Image (cartoon, rainbow, N blue to C red; front, side, top):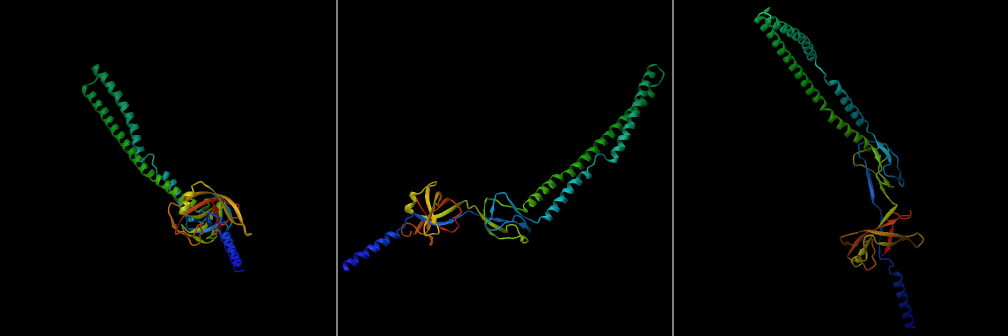
Length: 310
């Protein structure tokens, strides 16, 4: 009787050991690449049209921050650019006076040159003296020198006007760049969602004050979820990047739901085994982390437990 009891006890122990044997190669928890979207501008949040669990698309404008002060700065700078044209000079009053004097002087020179020609002809006919010709020639030369002086004054005045205009217009480029910078700051008042995903946590709400860098909400793409699992050093040679693996997760009915996964990352360094992680073999002092991309049918959640087989 004692011998029979011993045999039955041995069978029960062996059966228990067989049932407790791990039927997976590694295990871990599901996670996702989470992005915390922060404010890029300071001011009151005028609107933030999101809620936790909401699906968002990349480039979708979901709110805006008050940037009234920046818009006023932009208008002021644009007005300064417009006023530059009123400060430009085309011709000074002095230049206009000299141009009128040149016109009169040219008429006098034309008259004197005719008199010079007539006196030269009279001198050839002995009807005028040499002194008369010399006097009229001196007047022509003096008038031409005066004309050169007037023309130099005109050139100098135009040069001064050009220098003044260049000085005025040199302000235009920096002002236009200031407008572009202000416009960039204004555009940052729009809250634009960066990636496709699901809003996990909302940190800020309409009416609150935002500072640059203030977290607004956290979002993650859950279409493909990540199983971070741990393997022992002995298992490291069995895995490679791009390898397809079988993944399973609790279906909530006492069983497991199967998924297909692909290993896309293997840690290059060993680490101490996390307390919450089980391995196929007895606990190892050092393990390697791997990441498996798993298409999500909506049932997989961040933090859920998962197992995989190579």
